[in-house]
Amino acid sequence: MRSVLYLTKDANDDNLRNLSIVKGNYLSSKEKSECYVLEFNEQLSFKNTGLRVPLNKLGEDSYIELAKELKGSGKSYREIETILNEKGFEVSKSKLQRLI
Image (tube, rainbow, N blue to C red; front, side, top):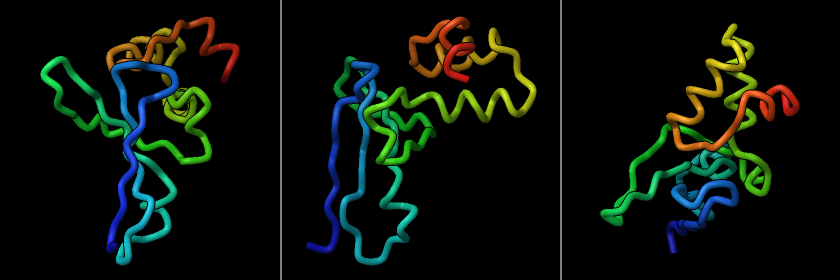
């Protein structure tokens, strides 16, 4: 096989799936070390959220890295909560404050 993909349900959100590239002959290590976060909808199709999650972080809350980036760019916890909720993550301002 030249490539192998692995699709799993997200541990934190039932509407999200994680697409991992397990094997790819002509892909960089970075491509194989991060999975794509896909939104699964009622029409049984997928939409790319634009988020990438390191494979070793899949069991954790997958939005933490994005939240840290947003905080680093000067966003308030309330703004980060709104952005993450719009992307399909169920997170509160108080949980963000504890995690970050």
